[in-house]
Amino acid sequence: MQKSTHILAFAFAMLAIALSLSARSQAQAGTETILESFSDTGTDAFGPYSGLIFDASGNLYGTTYYGGAFNAGTVYMLSPVSGGGWQQTTLYSFTGGADGSKPYYAGVVFDSAGNLYGTTYQGGITDGCTGAGCGVVFKLAPISGGGWEESVLHTFTGGEDGAKPYAGLILDAAGNLYGTTIEGGLGWGTAFKLTPTSSGPWKETVLHAFNGKTDGASPHASLVFDSAGYLYGTTYWGGAAPACPAADCGTVFRLAPSTGGPWKERVLHAFTNGVDGGNPASNITFDTAGNIYGTTAQGGHLSDCAGVGCGTIYKLTPTESGPWDGSVIRAFSGPDGANLVAGVIFDSEGNLYGAAPSGTGSHVDGLVFKFTPHTTGPWSQTVLHGFSGVKGDGKNPEAGVIFDAAGNLYGTTANGGTGQGGTVFEITP
Image (tube, rainbow, N blue to C red; front, side, top):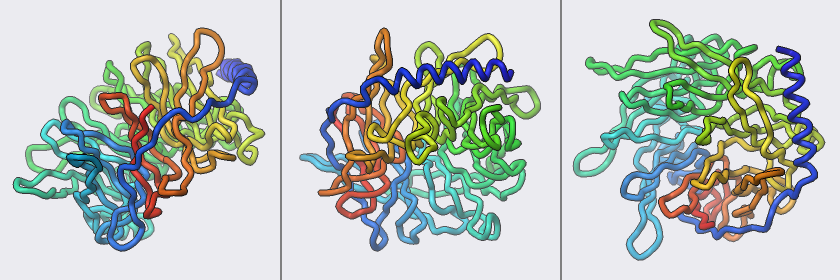
């Protein structure tokens, strides 16, 4: 195991050297339109750290960490207006009590009936988790005649059931919900499932409690299914790679279902905080061949970003046994982006798109990028938009981007905009 890790690290190192010799980025190549600027005053929603989803009518939905009637965060909708522009509507303002508080990097997801589901980082049982509450899983159901009604599906206690869900949820075909918490379980977070019951309350099942060492710790991202029904995710800490100090560099893991018990976890890659990257906060995505792609917040070129590295985009390829083979699509250096916490997505031609919340030089406030593969040599980067934080532009895109049917990109910035409370933006490539 240690020998194979050294071989993998060497492969990462050789590729990183090649990347360092390649062109860092191309000229800005997209047109940005600000759809909404949030204000950090009064009861307005602000601080959209999470990403967006569309409904069938072309409306956008997301969450904010701050603002609302009780300054405990919101769920909002943006609707296109006939003749141009978008209208923002706050669907729900969290009170900070039993209904939850502060949805963090957690957006919302639809079921087939049009209900919305999500998590809050705090709230629920307010005497738990240092008095702020350990978070909840919630449902928003549309009300006939207008409005939305919130119900709490699970309140985390901070014990074996988990605490502080950082990311959002996914649904399976049967209507079960799946998610992660960064604390609780054995103290290092959980992967969980919520199943609806005929009697009302949903039943929580802990699929895996992380041990903080070899199998990882503190999953910051949502889970992803493959076509065989396995779940995949990342942990920000843990992993116990031989080259990683204090075993705190993070993992990519897979959970396989088992009959009548916890799912079986397998670590596919333990990061070293070296050239392969470290501390992944994003979910993963698959290409059509079953390879995994994701980002890390640190590692890569260790001479950059105060000596910890600016992060990477990595690729993992399955093997018949043992850890997956790894390679680096980009080791960031600062001018091309830094500290990625969101995942990447593919277009139909195999190009990758994503956002970096920060950088150096002209991209200190973050950027949206495209990476194009080539038959030989490294992938090339195009900067679609570099955020400036001035003249109404946003800054610090913490979440990823999504496509509409026409190929335009949509996302959020946590800060900036005319109201300095963040933005929702569209980029036309």
